[in-house]
Length: 457
Image 1 (cartoon, rainbow, N blue to C red):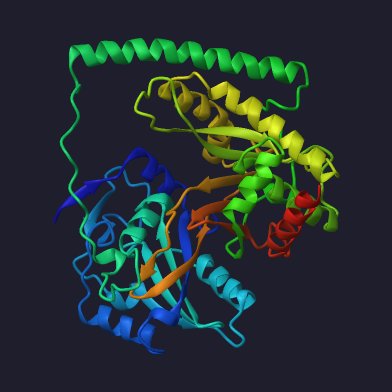
Image 2: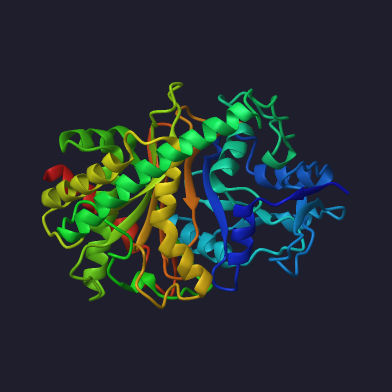
């Protein structure tokens, strides 16, 4: 039986799994059924998959030691007793089958813990959506495949037009083999280049850390350091139950708004989230005097990448929740993100990774010592923006209308906001611990109203 060793990051995700901190991610896809074959489309699809359950890695893999997630010899192995009946499920919404009913169902499905005795994923086909629509909710453990990669795999099972009515399911696609390893392997020259780059990296990181220290000493609120975030109701221990809500906006609308304020699309995303959080926490009597701080993954082009690729780093940005005026709030957010990204500009890729790791060190220490959710948080909320397909996609004639991401709340960080781009839209997924943030669905409503406030400003 072939075995695949887990990476260090995957092992960390498994080690973090608990009854409350469940480390699975998901995606909710909404389709227009008009182009699909008849009202029994989902039933026929389920019957077809059960008749010929073709499954390829990684979807066919289970853990070698499912009862001991931190086993030193943990590995992925083929599941010789794969049961499609377990992984593929059908659900129907109660009438009227609107967004509220859909949100309640997906919240409940996302609250369930993964069974590690099987390949850790589930696919739920959801019918009963008003307006001739249906949904697919996919849940997978982050150690098996991260959400970004899973969405890419899923997109590869969709087609660019409504004519293809025989596309295979995402788990039936064979993984493409990797190309040859690029030149410059473990040679003396490569080792010397690594040593040289490491020296430059240390200097860059040291300079960036010094800039942060100076900013803290001067009480400059634009450039933030870890552990400056206030303690809020978002930052306690989490329970098992989840809440999920969505919003969808036209991409050009948000980009145009960012341009008018002299900021970026991400600045507008942060402004909408900050405004929604400010209003909701005010209603709950839980808004701190200091601004909430978001950890934001960012793509930054490094100076050592002449091919134009992107490096992924992390910044800490103020959500300016202490500011009442919408214009002043987004201007404060733009100042904060600009100062944070200036830190990364000019760095090598290694320096960006090291500096971002330093920002996340307090979070790692809290998780290792079990103090997450009991001490002051490193930041308050994670807000990430993942680009997606620019053209409309179809599944067996049914057009994909929206692609909403579901993320991971964990101890100390009970709210996660992830945004996916798709075909000229931006799709917000708000995932929270039900106990940490009451009435979480209001965040989505308030984010929509915050957009109108910004446009009026």
